Length: 229
Ligand SMILES: C[S@@+](CC[C@H](N)C(=O)[O-])C[C@H]1O[C@@H](n2cnc3c(N)ncnc32)[C@H](O)[C@@H]1O
Image (cartoon, rainbow, N blue to C red):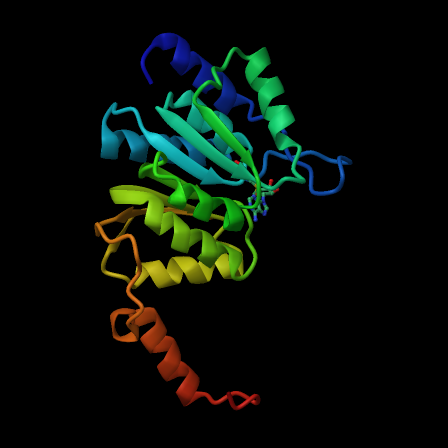
């Protein structure tokens, strides 16, 4: 962030995070789950890891993270959000009222599991420095997102995974936590931040290289379920 004006816009945003989301067809509104402390920690990790470099950022799911990332003044922010989600209208409204520049934003109204492979095949797209996975939280969507995000994330880039209180997301975090190529940089109540140490963009399919899977396989053999699979 380059100047006092940008800092004051960030402070104003963090002091009063807008209620962009609704989970009950508009009856009530909420922030989407990020509080000031989450954004403060993300900002501090980004600054520590990249200094003041301008970044290429990608996120699945749109909302206050979109505004926050735009306030970081990235080279480009690629946001992929569900086509049924009208949150982009409220993001634009907030940014227009608060004079926040959205020219860095490339917005795709598409489910991430379909959009991410298209970006990978687009030779112009290239790698990104930071990814936030915070779109579809179902199973196996978070793993599908991770698979493609690993392809797009550059070596030493950061992967932010939000909503780890949800089982599907937590299992992804457990899986990464046991891979030597992923180093945990920050752990919060609902958000973990990993650094990708490897330059590989295709995950090894070898079970022996995946301690999480090896352990799960042994657990499964030790406690044969009623299904006997
Ligand atoms: C927890 S909210 C987003 C949070 C956002 N990062 C924020 O800071 O507010 C998750 C969003 O992901 C969107 N979403 C759900 N499934 C998706 C999918 N498969 N692809 C992309 N976006 C999805 C939802 O519409 C929802 O708005």
